[in-house]
Length: 607
Image (cartoon, rainbow, N blue to C red; front, side, top):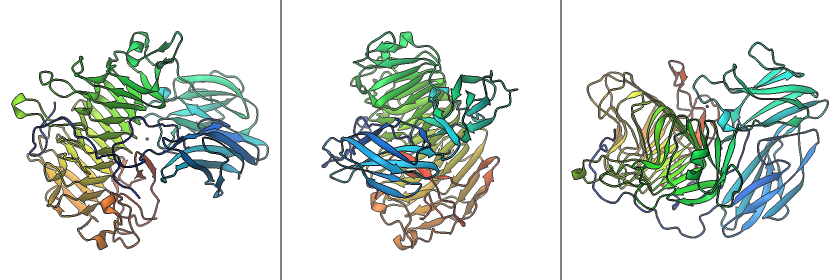
């Protein structure tokens, strides 16, 4: 059951790796009041922190190949109050059991069946909160073996046309595009994580050359391997940050690593708080990564650079980092951000942005935000200052493509939950909700563009600043393309008044396709030239909608919902399929959407 949480913990451990195949400030949209930059969350009541659990044996992450019919696991678990139990389940043969001990646990033997055995270890505390860690164990009986490993995210090519692939060659060779491999396998992102892995198998034991390429032309990490075994592709160079770090490439705080950073480096930052350590990163192609949990960049005073806690350059990747408290003065614009993206290209994974004037601001080129949370960012200053509203996230017209997926944006203060002027927008499988916040629009696309809003949970709350939910072109239509595809979303109006589920600006003729959406509560959607509305379910009736825990923001369908089997094939928009392939998992994850025919209406397929 999903319920509105209290304020999230400041630092959240990560490390779950599951092998799954997968890819200028404007005014708020309505009336607003002046006031402080961010509100405080609801009070914490009781134990709200879930336990953490990690697997340390036979390997820490990724995939483990074996020719044995059983595997033993060991690891650790922790909780702020105490771990009550640790259990396990093998999804391939549906077996389960209980580990010995808790904080330092072990499982002597888990029976395997041929193939990939996905084993999930769950730590549970006394209040029922859980944390999980997962290991894929590949069992290959007989004369063949598998080869698997991890690929560091700093090596991944994230361009739209990239095919990140691992190549396998017989013997010792120098890989080129002209050399024929024995086999290839795609590199895939582990679900709910910022990590990537690959797996061959089964293949014959022997000596091979292994290489990774993001484009099929440039090969990296070439090495000779003897199977069976595992092989990881590691970063080119690694700098380490933390108060206990020592050595040539070790630094006490992130800003101290700037002078030593080279293009392509991975800068690993130990979990913990770094207070008022603001940084402008001038080097391109950096991966800035929290390790051992999220590193928390916490600002407590006006930021001297006038922009943000971190100001990034070209092709920055930011993983497992928390940002809070970003603020600058009235004279500087009152628009500080956790991340101010000054360069072209930005990737953010497993970020947590809260109580900043902006979560993320600006950007150029291609921007990807995934598995991230935005909470209580934004405000609308006194109009007398001339400063515009700020938001949970805001992206400028210089962004060619903005993607937000598997993320949670909620409780923005006065500004919008998602605002983008990008030329192309992909807003996919997110939870975008006011809850107890006082935001304006849930999604604001003020300059139009080619925009896809697919598979999201979207909610208008009770303490909001206007009646709009999604807005399109309400400021201008400066982007050359005016296409909007709103498909298989569950959109809920809890405001108590009639909502505008979709608000349109004037002065342009749009192409808008609304298919398979749930519109719950009182409200309206526009009709007219260029607007096609197909197989949507609009109702205020609980019996019709079949949302069994709407008050708890859980929009899974009950067996009586009229959305079941009521959808239609949404088709394509050019080369982009509009059929949803994933669905959101609280708080910041995803799962495959079941493939049923006909499809259900809304963001969830009934199971």
